[in-house]
Amino acid sequence: MTDHNVPAAPAEEAAGEAAMQDWAELLVERARAEGVELTGDGGLLTGLVRQVLQTGLEVEMADHLGYERCDPSGRGSGNSRNGSSSKRVTTEIGEIDLRVPRDRAGTFEPVTGA
Image 1 (cartoon, helix red, strand yellow):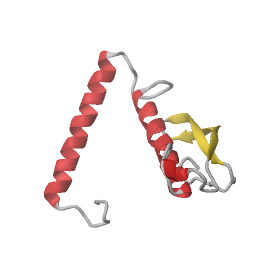
Image 2 (tube, one colour):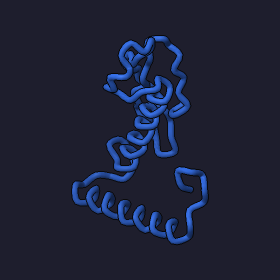
Image 3 (cartoon, one colour):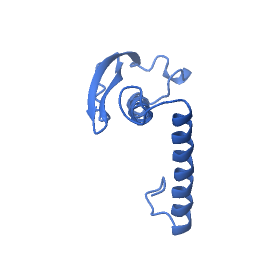
């Protein structure tokens, strides 16, 4: 699917899958060269899942507030970021520690990592 919720044309889908395959091969090759396991604490997949979930939380917060981190348009908006709290979530590849962002009004309720 593309950003417009329209199914990708077969050529676009194949190109996307090929790019993902190339990306995955590079990551696995680098992990092996550096002696990094694929799963487990400090593993490649664990780190990737953590990063994707953390990014999802940050995107949700930006959507909730209506502005990106450090965007001057957020000044005087009535609500702003207010640090984060730790949360451990269990995924299919193990437990992952996340930093869940908070807002000053206490109205942010993330879906990611729930």
